[in-house]
Image (cartoon, rainbow, N blue to C red):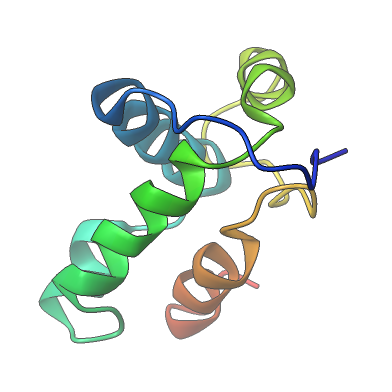
Amino acid sequence: MTDPRPHPLGPENRHYWLAVTMARKTGADMQRALEDGVIAHADWAALVQRCRGCGWAEGCNHWMRSQDAGAADVPQACPNAPTFEKVLAAFGAV
């Protein structure tokens, strides 16, 4: 479960790759979403920033190691679940 208490933001590079991996594990084609205007570059930047502030990062990392690429449901503990689900829905994946 996500820790609602404020805490220091995590490293940008680590959380960028957590977000990329989450997209890959769930099948959310973020590059296509950017190219097709489903999300803007600012949305992607905000997604990484939300990931940096998430208290579930270690749980996320563990969860991702146990998932096959493209087959996982977006975990509701992820603060970016609405964005990933929007991308999946845009391309008929949900």
